[in-house]
Length: 260
Image (cartoon, rainbow, N blue to C red; front, side, top):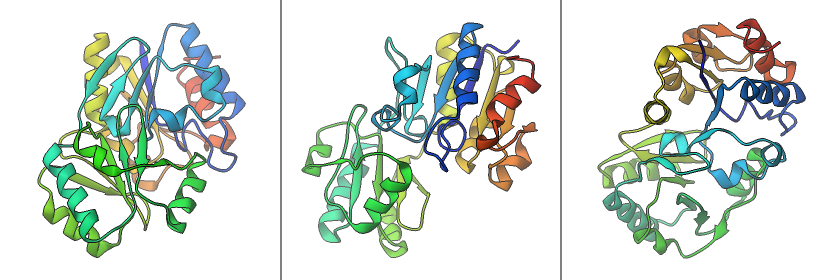
């Protein structure tokens, strides 16, 4: 019996062709909650980005795994918190002083950066959300940082990695990387949420489309790849549904007889 389903956001719930949540997906998620099934988002996004979409004014997830698993919470409390080690944040601040580049610093309830470039504006246009506020990034020395997103080239990335000790890097475009704690990810976030709700792996499902969703698949009972998913994601999924823009989310839930 399925008691909780974890959904990636971009390309799984949110269509990147329309920058909206398909009506069929909205109806499907609402139907799951009416049956008492927990609907949990698992995303690399920050909560402030998710809340910019109209859908999130109409629908409240039962729990949120944000920043690729580094900060997890529900409407009542924090479930799991895993900030970037402070010594690594300080090393990156020093690197930016030496060789300036734009960098987003992400706290649990806000995000900010040092300056914009055309590449920064382009990436946020693709994301469909507002640019982070410009702020003195030295505040990161005194606050927990859960993720950093530097806009740098391969040479700068190599230097940054050499200066840090306990991080991992995920390059998601040619212009920007995500910097995260070495230990952690969507899979860790799922483990913490399962413990919190007292759920077993076999009572869960996961939906995704990107390579960072593969660890999430490994921690859930049934994995579903969207039709628009990358080939490596489809290869490890238990089931492949239609594209997000072809009602793939609802189709899969109907296939597993979780909604009508």
